[in-house]
Length: 178
Image (cartoon, rainbow, N blue to C red):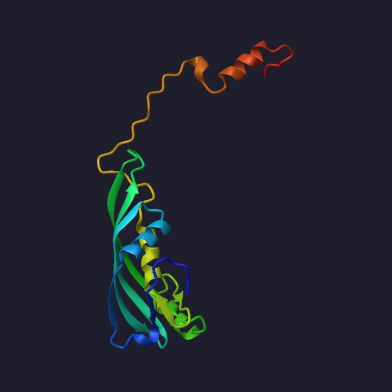
């Protein structure tokens, strides 16, 4: 299906008309692979809960939540830190050739995102969880209470980046001043 480090494929045909609930907990090997994929130091916890319901004739709606504990480097102190990620999921999957389901979705939910396409009648919930985890990760994590303090800048008139060039322009014979 795809190259995501966590794969939990579910066939639409396996979901009864009454729906299905799945609680996923990634094992240590999976968490290590996802941490590497997401460029994290570590991923001590990764869980997802999904409610699957049929959508139209051949589609599937996935509603739930992805939660994780991620270890990253604080961008200010450069110390490791743990933070929590919680992302809500609400996606609709339809077959690529099911024009009716896509049109029904467009009419019902015009303001929402268009449906995702099913791959061979399957939804990979591990891939969904991984994608939503990555969406929820703070790209610039900061430890609580950490504040960036710029170093004091005590430049004299001759310390600016072009001071040497200005000096050369004054002393070089044949150099024109502008």
